[in-house]
Amino acid sequence: MSEEVKTTGPLEYRTNEGQMTILGFWIFLGAEVVLFSTLFATYAVLFGRTADAPTPAELFEPGTVLIMTFLLLTSSFTCGLAVHEMRRGSVKGLTRWMLVTLVLGLGFLGFEIYEFIHYAHEGATIQSSAYWSGFFILAGTHGLHVTLGIGWAFALLHQISKRGITNVTSRKFFIISLYWHFLDVIWIFIFTSVYLIGMVL
Image (cartoon, rainbow, N blue to C red; front, side):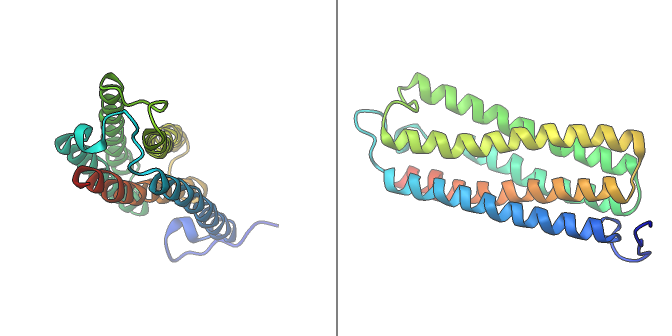
């Protein structure tokens, strides 16, 4: 027996399977919130324990951090445009805006890698002190999630190029957009609680 398909509302929500899958992903994001909350709590406990390593105020570069923030937050906007194009049924528009999103995401990763290498050259590595262990694990976990998101999105774009925008592919694309926006929200917390505070204190 085929599943009933609604004719109104966003395409990704028109089947019961789509609704339940998206709900399940929201629950998964709840687990991700717990993971990052634990990492933030660990970082807070270790804050200031730099031992003989450089302090964050000595190494954090406002220009680099602002560029990274601009790239990632702009990618959230272009991802939203990609979802808009998906709901219009435009494969071309979806692909164009999602590719822009992924280029911005890759730019963010490039600056983050540069940042980590720079810190290592200055004597701040994951082994340098408790503080830098907490920093690299928190920022690195976020960076790993961004990397996974980029790979996931490229694979999905390939699938959409072959199958077009359907109930299934639209659901998958909406889920990756939720994931991407979630990573942007996490970055805002990293930007404020790690970088801004680290530059001042």
